[in-house]
Length: 116
Image (tube, rainbow, N blue to C red; front, side, top):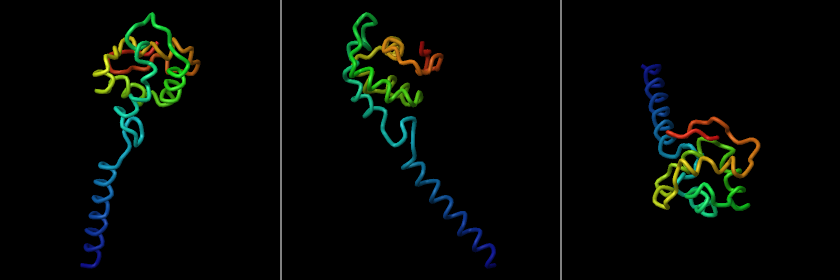
């Protein structure tokens, strides 16, 4: 009886931990929300709408920071905030290359888009 109680107790503890991890767990951007991270890419707004627009140094710095995690960069570029801001994902994915970021994730699949 004592053994089965310990097993039930252990399973209950594991379920609580799993539920807590799901609620407070890390997503594509760790604990940061991709929609909130998208606000940090405000300097990239014109460059993400027009492939011929120049890309500012502040935009490149933010893309380089967020781009250290390609999953996060994609989540940000495809976020509701980015979409509602008029960002065109097919153009936004070109920004790391336009910034000449050497260690960018070339060929990374970002939704329907591939990072050049």
